[in-house]
Length: 128
Image (cartoon, rainbow, N blue to C red):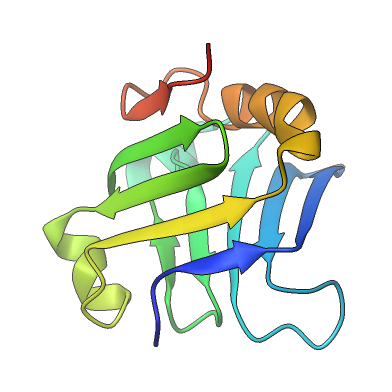
């Protein structure tokens, strides 16, 4: 599994149960993707079970989990993700990955990532 790819397609969805951001190499017939989901509200059960976090999925549900990110950085033309030791195991040994994207989507993506990572200190916005 190659950790880096170019996201030709980015989706931002506000669904009834959660907020979702997806980065994919293409809109249909996706080979590489990274999906982030955040519940609109975390309840007591979420906190108790460790699900009061951002859910991250890489290419398949088998490579997914809640939290597990040491750092998620937004740069002007890419995002950089660094996983913690627990999530590295889930992500088949990937510690870091970068996803490049077209800059015409930067403003909407920036707003979406702020919303997704609200309250989590590992999100860093490097866009001036």
